[in-house]
Structure formats: structure tokens, C-alpha cells
Image 1 (spheres, rainbow, N blue to C red):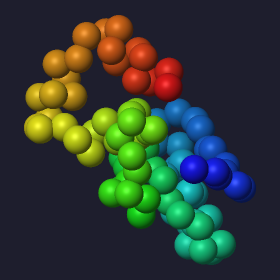
Image 2 (image 1 turned 90 degrees about the horizontal axis):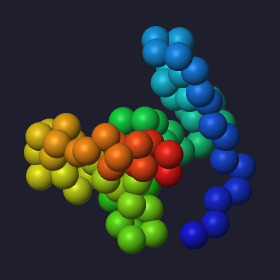
Image 3 (image 1 turned 135 degrees about the horizontal axis):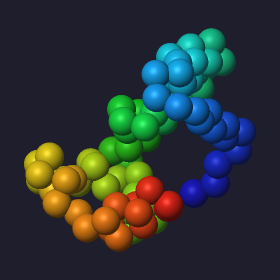
Image 4 (image 1 turned 180 degrees about the horizontal axis):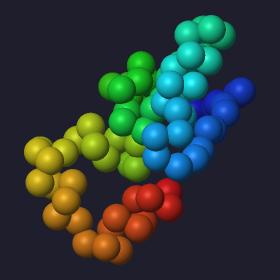
Length: 79
């Protein structure tokens, strides 16, 4: 899969990142890939090609998210 014109907006909590990304995606007919993964592409992503993006999609329940070891969490965040 090839991505062209991908932009990342980062910053501290409650800085307006999600709001800005949504507004930009709406204005320029972009695809919103937010940190909560409520995006248009997630159902189509291959788990083996994008393991960190599809991680939350494939959880059984919220307990699976918090049961990870610190090392597993760090690896997920780094990827």
C-alpha cells in the first residue's frame, strides 16, 4: 500500500489536534485517521501489514488493552 500526501499533527492533550485534523479533512476532502481509529480505512487494513493501526480494532474487550506489559505498550507506541 502506498500513501501520498500524508500529514501528521502532533501535540499535547487538549490542544485541538483532533478538531484541526477533522476540519482539514472536511475542507480538503481528506481521510481522517485519528488516534481513536474512527477512520474510513480501518476495516480494510490488513492486520499483518498494519499491526499497530489495527490493534484496537481486533481487541476482544477493553481489558485486552490494559493487560499489556509495559514492553508491549512501548513497542505499540513506537510503531
